[in-house]
Image (cartoon, rainbow, N blue to C red; front, side, top):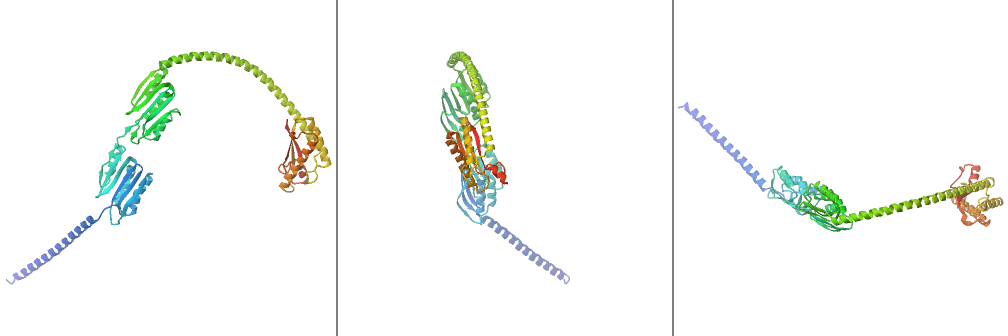
Length: 454
């Protein structure tokens, strides 16, 4: 029995250790579970941002609750880069709100939303991003769905495709009266047609942004020049994407031309054009009349050529006479110039120093000049006065003018008609040589007589 007690004591200690270890382990597990539950409760208690972005045309508004103003600015910047206007109204911020990943993703899809949704909204509520509105094509709708599939955020796409109606229009012609009406997508489409029509037309087109062009505008632009020129009466009508051309042209050639032109169109076309037989008869009568007019015109041209030949001969004789007169006049001017140049080379027109008063010798020279001019009563002359650079420019200008005025008065006194004379003082502005020496200055102080012809 004594040998068993140690073993019993060892067994008891082992049991006590196991119980203590299990209790510590249970306490540790309970702590981790409590921490996890606490963390889950904290996550559930965090509130998310909420917002609604609404677009209509080029204008949009933003409402909602955000973490900070930077989130609002991120959405606003996307609209600014797309040349659209975003108005922020009825918003608030709370730094405890979560959802910045939603803002980043919304900014990613905004360019596509702005470009392809005529109107609609992007709303984030109850942790779901919802897209509503009208998109301009199935391709654009599919692209939005592809973008939404790139995020782990809960999304819902409620957008629908706007089925556009084709444009419609009518262009009618009755002789010189043209009427233009229709429903187009925008002003640019209207101008494409309007630019191909004459200026004076009756026009009443309207715009509808839901309308679309299936290629009919290009086809119409191609046929309008021929329609304007070849149809006496007619109409171009576009309905349900089909182009119908009707009316009357002046000849079978015009009819064939229009048929070939319309066959090249890549849209449904109905051609109801016919030949205007009255126009054919009228054209034949006009052709006969034209031939008669051409005959009379040819006779008139022959007579005119005869008269022209006579007139040409007279003109040639007159031209030769005028050339001879000019030659004689040139010779006369040359003689006058030579006589005056010879006179002034020998006798300078002298004045009292720094004055516009002729000396006795100067008067004699001017009198001789008058005698030369009397020999040629139709010759006109310029009396040009010049000075050196001594003194001020203003004084020299006045001095030169005084001197030529004196010469002009003397010539008039001697019987020269005032209408033949022009007196012009140039001061020191036109020197013959640099005013660097007394000799050069003497050369620059002069009165010149320039012959101006008859």
